[in-house]
Image (cartoon, rainbow, N blue to C red):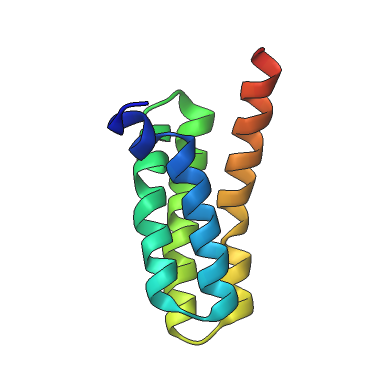
Length: 101
């Protein structure tokens, strides 16, 4: 596995999800910031795809950034709610990938 598939692929997306959830649960902005930074490559790559996935990628990236801002303002539940688009994107893409095989 080369570095491009690690940075823009499923390993970074799943690790980012783990970091985002643990950062919000522990109310640690630095952990959540690492999750946002790690998910950005996957989501920006997703925006280069056809329209439905392009909008989903932008919405998820915006949700991740909004979760980071909400966590900075000590709004843990709101930050958790902003993670829903990213979780939905990962679920939709995983169903699509498994459905292809």
